[in-house]
Image (cartoon, rainbow, N blue to C red; front, side, top):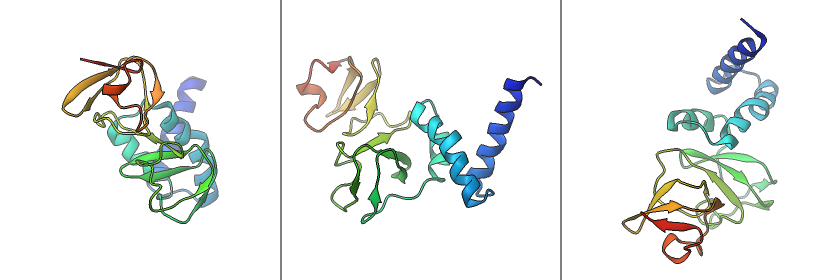
Length: 154
């Protein structure tokens, strides 16, 4: 095996150990930051991979002081803090895209605020299909039928 293959095999074993809860807390934190967080942020994981990796992050809960870049488990996926704050029950990731980025899975095809979307992706909104024409993070005021600079009906 070459160096690249060795590194990939090590990543796979470490990822499995973290997901299975078989790493010490200090080791887990370093490996989560070095391996799992970048995988989640890249957005190229399957539904099962996102779900498995979400388990290594702390759950979202109200009353927690959070910093920009912190990752949490929420509603079957992972969310990232984009603005430091103390969490509140009425500031959930789905309701406050100014505070959170939702890392969605490929199965999440219904439009919702707070998700990063790429050009060419298709989402459903109010019974119709809409395609992204400009990459952005969705917001409540930028719904597909009101923002033709971001969406086109397909």
